[in-house]
Length: 114
Length: 205
Image (cartoon, rainbow over all chains, first blue to last red; front, side, top):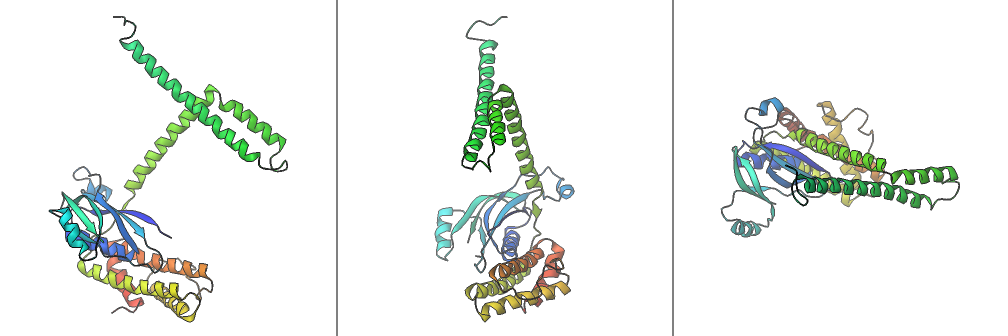
């Protein structure tokens, strides 16, 4: 049953907006984010013509089995990843990804925790 | 200037030609190995399934597979496959759907929808052979029918008239139920219209 799907998220959005979007998609698609990273950047002004944002982020979602839970996703821009992992582990969360992601149109190193 | 042995363009050219010949020979071998494997596989069949005529044809193919011409054909096919795969990968990236940005309220509503839908799925999963499981399917079916009236995406005829009695039918119904909810995530308009409809159909306040 597990199905993997790939989508684009607008990297001009804030980190909070992206977190809201990823969690909404996780819930409505019965899926969990497995990969999230910056996509190939469009030439300036090309976004509206191709419907692909100027600063696209690529997300991979994997569908969960029938009756299986979907864990909430938390996005963080950590100053110290090791310390952040310990902090998140204290709340029962583990690292899903740590990648370059467009946030507000600017590349940032973003960590995702489930 | 004419190049001397061991330097200039001639050694370079000979290396390139040698490399190309090696690739073609590898392709010839690959072509022959594939036919060889097919023959070996067919040898397990009896004479009525693998006739003399078919065997003769395969032997001719095996001979042809080892020729220079087949090497070129194999190379061209391989290059064609690479190009097709690259084009498919490019198309897949271009075809990626852009998910609309969600608000904090939509995130919260989607969580409530998931919790309700997940509880029904779990109820069925843990009670496949009793009334509790049937009740969970009944509730999904009711929600699907209610959504149909509100402009759901399920094609007419796909929604079963009654709760399926067998497990395969139940799984199909659950998949249909999931697809209907997933459809709410495909555009800003659907998020705004369909999420409240889903909440209503699932009895979420």
